[in-house]
Image (tube, rainbow, N blue to C red; front, side):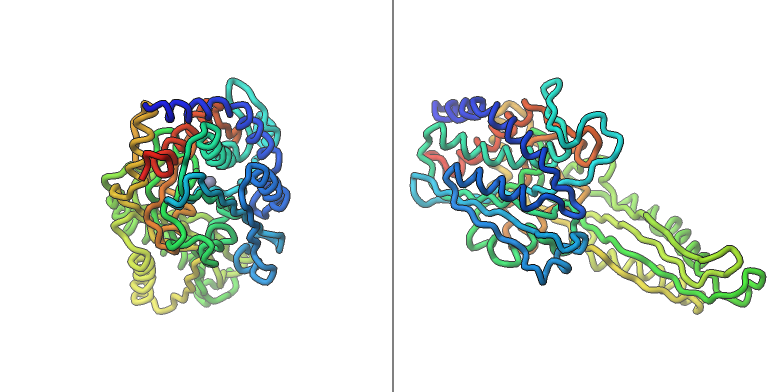
Length: 428
Ligand SMILES: [Zn+2]
């Protein structure tokens, strides 16, 4: 490694205490989503901090009249996003965008630590959002700080977007989705994107599976429970549909796999269909005229959104052909195509080199759950977009979530090496 790189990595080490304290302070602002608590306070914290560091900052909030549409679970509470830009002393160069969400999922009751305490034990910082992903936000800010504090003559521009509402998904959202829709983030102003979601120190997030969340509602005809033959039982119609999916579709789905690239978690490598809530009927002596079920269908890259949807509907059409009494409605609440960026994208290679330089073995990974990468790749058309951030992939949304301080430091160093390759004097 060159002397400059040594200085860069040392600068990260020197930031350890500051990084730890910043993460603790962020955990202590419980930005729980839904519904989206303490958002303004959190964004103001970042705004003041980054301004002190010399960034040009801008808060981009969703206008009130669009809150219900973009943030349906937000009860009308504000949805601010922070943009912070900094140009290097070396003049123009690549425009690197670093993105992270500041919202966190609620904490369940089975924590053995205070989820909002930022408690430190055994070299780990505990708290909701420590890994997913306030740790990533801290890492992306200090990776840039390391570049500056090491006195490196870097060129180009760094933009941080610190966004709301990643956790509540949605076809569009009030965070990254909104910034892309507004053209604030666009292919014309962005050369490379790193989303600092936790993918482990070795993991490079290159994509996610596709998804449809939706509901089937079966309509029948009420009758007295003692004369069921006079009605049409909606619960029984739905039961037939569930049985059909189980015998006809599920065995086929298990054979459709994500190939070539490992999936996190590995058990999620196949195409899946899960029925998650069911409701129907009013009383034990009334034949039910309505029964509904919600579902969560995750599909792999060899499938398409349209094909996946058509496959579900064709089962129902077949059933209708056999029994014309079947009436149903089909609704979707969320749908996304799968996302995947190729190994030929410069950032995938840059991440591979940085992870290798840190003495680790890089692993490109697809995640089972969808994330904000879809907005960069699919909506903004920026394919040079990866995920890399400290924290294990399997601790997000769990009780006693933590981030090891050493992982935070190592992850920040790896990010700093990626920035150095793109923005440093020896860079592109
Ligand atoms: Zn996350």
